[in-house]
Length: 500
Image 1 (spheres, rainbow, N blue to C red):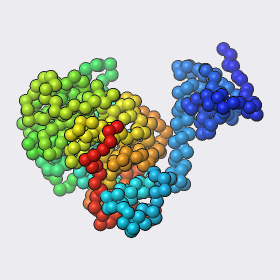
Image 2 (image 1 turned 120 degrees about the vertical axis):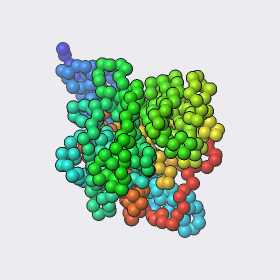
Image 3 (image 1 turned 45 degrees about the vertical axis):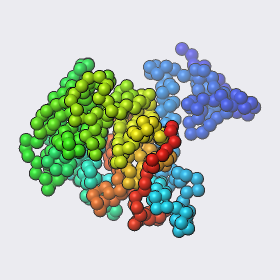
Image 4 (image 1 turned 90 degrees about the vertical axis):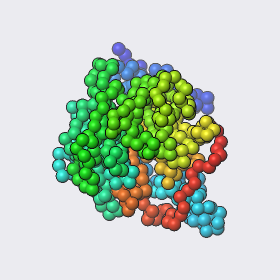
């Protein structure tokens, strides 16, 4: 088998038409562009000044494949962004936006408190710098042994529930106490127990059964390869199972519950008093609402698998996102019925919906799908009013984080980049590269809060990737940002918005 090598003299002139045919996905654009033309089945190496033949991805004789070139291009981009992060060569998200200009306009009365707060938060996002967090544990065998798969903060952001992948399959749970996360020392304590599951955890949320955030609700399916319909379960784990994770609580031993169900894709806990102690699980073509105390169940049949769920707090209404792209709501006070007559709200995406988030006023719903689209829906007008561009997803179930107090939207893409948008106008504020090369098993999981560790905690972004934990400081004492003390929280969304 012969490889064809074609030399190209860079001194030879080419017209603008040929120069424009260069493919952006080829290796000629790795780290810098080249004016050479695109040849089908070949790629141009600017360092060696020659064309090389591309081989199919399954051919192991020559590692030169389109997939390897794309991976090389992505890795080059990531390293370049990391270098800019280290050198703090970060540009402001908007042209001309800086702290001096914001303060000057505020002093002249040209900025309201709402807009001032919003712009200051944008400046802080651009000032965040990554620092590694030291994880300590009473059991030395706990830390640094398993990869983080998922982290979820409780209501006060004092604790983080972690799901870790285990080398021989299955998942292991733990709780990280953030009280030691301070300005001077970045140290947290991780508490573990012997609770291990051989199931694949698809969704996790905090549950308030005996008191606020007393339990953790998880939905999972059994990790048995080759079996199409394997049983799953929804589990309620008391937080007190994890040693010293919440010393003030004393959960009853009988509150450790496990409900056997079919494959579960999602779960949600209801905080509305009209559906007290109820939780929901999204299954294959149905929704199951269960009372954790009585065991009573309601079943709602759907036409597609339910991948994302969230309860409203003002009313006992459950919002669901489906594999078909449909988003619908259920009033769980009604009896179980078949068909679509009980669906109060029906919205549609072009791809499978992986995350839904209801805003506090409950007039707006944000949803993300597997085509990378993030849309903000007005539930009164039943239309999309904003779209957040740049998110990358093709097939993964990725969460969406909305912080209304700061006016920020955060999402981690399948390309392992963490992106932060302005909630008000959907402007992309920052793109954060992962400390590790992009891969399926190294997608970061993040938590953002202005009070990490409690009411007196430190603000910032917490990122868990592989076996490491990183903190991106969002400190109000940062000299590159003006202060927001004594400012009212921004009014993030008005009653009007242009349709996307």
